[in-house]
Length: 381
Image 1 (tube, rainbow, N blue to C red):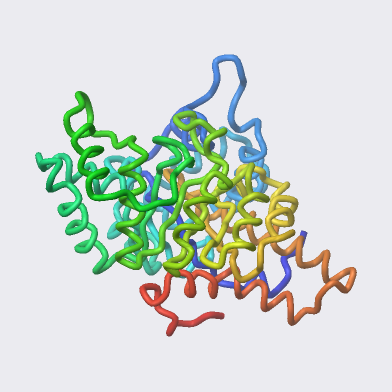
Image 2 (cartoon, rainbow, N blue to C red; image 1 turned 90 degrees about the vertical axis):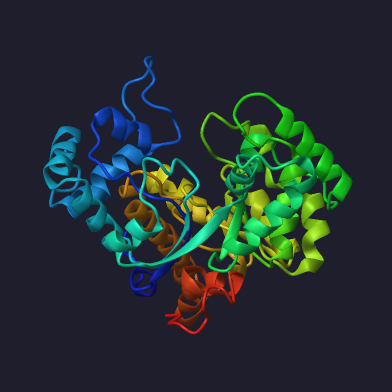
């Protein structure tokens, strides 16, 4: 469908995304980065035989000077001809975003850092601190259990000078059944002692320590993002329902620090409910919009059934392939436009309302949620 002008012209703040790969990729690598799967199933065909694969051929091909629905072979050949740097620049420019809030803690060895992403994109880049990565860095210094909490607090205070928020990946490590209460100093010291004494890699997976880090971020007045719902096979999706966070949301309500529920699919309606009933909770649907392809309108409509329009943000959750930056924005715009056009057609709202809703979701909600770190003084068109 043709985008509504208010949606087509709206610059977006992408409030959660990652770096892109620096080098050219072959077909197997491209497909492995296309979805949350590890790669093509030996019992299946191709990840291009999916909604997101069709969306790439339909919407991304023209950005590479190819006709819509170009064949997979032609698409990948053109991508290789242009080279990774040019491909990344094109898709980042075409996304129509102004600001990128970047979590650089996922596979940093193979993807662009914030400086590289800023140079490629020409966007304003803001840092999101991955809490578990920070704690694992502290652990790697040989810190004692007695000093662990203090050292983490010092490390986060230093990062808070430039970062606009934090992210918790407790969903991947222990699930979202997190207690609400702030852990005591003794509980943190005991949990740190068990973790630091364990054999093997320093991969944080302790409910008490995840909760400690969240409260540490709240002490710094840093908005906290939570991975919720859809992800790769490393998580147990049944433990990633945002309703499991209800106790923690009650406990953190009076802090006034925003909690941002990321991705959420297939629990996006549950997340929308939480955004309605808790004043500090915001939601997005992240990478689900481009994974569902032409069904993005249905997904956006389901999120907006009950979520207040002032509590919904845009994110791409782009990682690896620059196509995700463009496709996420394109599919989100299409879905939002479809939702708003339907309401205009049956006179549920006016064009002024549609423009106002678009501005809220596109820019203003992000600036409010991350204020004052994400300046409110810039354009909020």
